Image (tube, rainbow, N blue to C red):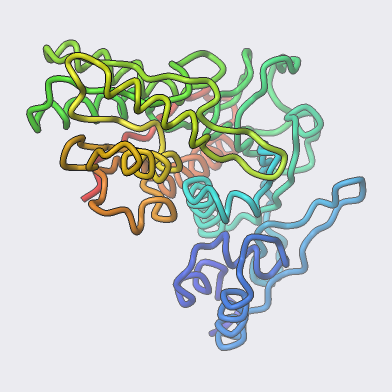
Length: 353
């Protein structure tokens, strides 16, 4: 191919996401040796020459997440600040839904002619005051206790995936968590279920939106004349320094509680896919047959956790790659029209077919 070859062309030819190509060329973690060799072979075959990754000094060296083909004029640079302490490598391996959103961001910016630099950070503050980029995307959630921002950022800014700080003046793009709960409830009602349960870590709050899945689920079940039970435990997901994973003991305890309810739920909505394998294991221990004695529906559509589960659960797809695309398009629109009012956009889910 000629000099117009892009990182998206390489990704399509290799059958992987743009984020995977970016991790390979920047030697970032989260890609197997075999996959890296495959991507490098495709790069060589296409004759693509990625730009050298940008690095920044400091205790954490900032490495470019995506590179673009060499061209006569430099491309405007967008900074993507990942606010997950476990980092991009962990997301690529253990959080496919986040990796897909990153791929959507990278692909859309590449298509629009922007270069992308990814920085890992525990806080938005060191980045918000800098104005050396064409735009910025914060990827993650603001942690309560940090001082919220005042006024607009130094550059056009979009917050995606998690909840932004109070007073954040940029654009916000997020999954429609309430629509997820509503969709799960309506689908189970259509299947004839009259007693259902939700298994999650908590209900929704201004600091954590994922719990709104449970709020909406219970509300719409009750409106449909069904019984809704909330099986909640703050320790459902164990947050560690190296990984996040569901607590199998907590999952089992919640399922024991469900089996003792009256009327006993015939369907269970699980907060997210990463919890479902633990639910299946606990069901086996307790002598409950998934999808026969209890219909299980889950959310995010992450094959890493769902492949191999038999019978397969019902799945709600949040369209993570499209979420990333919307975030990138929103930022581009903000760069072109900086004085327009801030936007709050949500991406609606669907039942995976």
